[in-house]
Image (cartoon, rainbow, N blue to C red; front, side, top):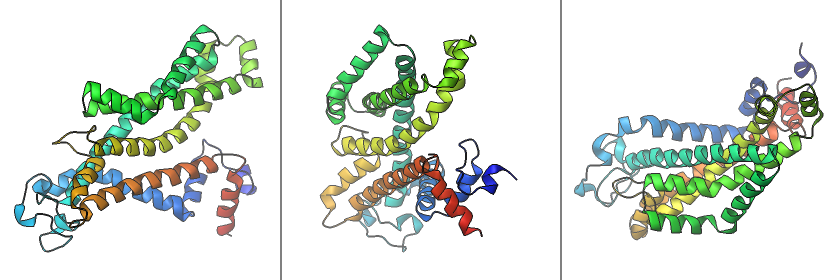
Amino acid sequence: MSRTDSNPTVPPSRSDARPLVRMLLRDPAPLLAVCVLLVIVFSALFGPLLVGEATTKPNFALRNAAPQLEHGLAYILGADNLGRSVLGRLVLGARTTISIAAGAVVLSLSIGGALGLLAGSRAGLLSDVIMRLTDIIMAFPSLLIALIVLYLLGPGIGNLVLVLAVTRIPIYLRTVRAEVMEIRRRPFVAAARSMGAGQGWIMRKHLIPLVLPTLFTIAAVDFAAVIIAESGLSFLGLGVQPPDFTWGSMVAAGRGYISSAWWLAALPGAMILATTLSLAVLSNWVRLATDPAQAWRFFRASKGSTT
């Protein structure tokens, strides 16, 4: 019997996902968040194959039709001002919204993480330059930077991903730099260096594995923040342009019909809320469950429920 099985107060290790899965199955809030996210991701990946042309083909006979089942499952959430299926547009909007958010998060995580490793592992002029550039970016509100850049470059998916990534880089950079500077002072790093290990080996074997869990937790929260930022920019007309659309642009298109067809703005807004709230709940649970100072509570509760 392993130590984790025999002692309920010992938190599960990061490398073994099975205790985390068992704890997740017994915690309703993060389990519901996972289910919501899985449904949204599945819809974004495979939904466009199922909704058909009701998403893009106008049907003026169903203009601003209320949610119903008379005209098939495609109109269960109603139709927009051109008679297109709101359900289908939510599915297609999910694909665009998630793609933009994923691209921005991956790009900012990669650039910010690499620069943070460089700034934290090598003190000197290069580190100072990197941090001063970061301070300059953080000195301006991210939404203001996005508005200025998109006004100059023009709206579009590529420009939107780029500007959202640039505004999020300082978050990863400063976090990684702080983590690396703290890890460098630990005894095992000093022991590896005294045995002749190079900086590259220490970075691959010690620094990056210890920094990655923190980065992934931040990325989950940042994913929600990017979705909100993208929705705000699309609502202002500086995001994705027709014929492409996102949940934010759907809210903008439906605001003129809020009194007569509330579902045009309320449903994409509800999708934004459900996605960001689920990401926040899940990321907070993962942070606590993988924290040795907090995880014992989850693990002890899960062990107690089986006895």
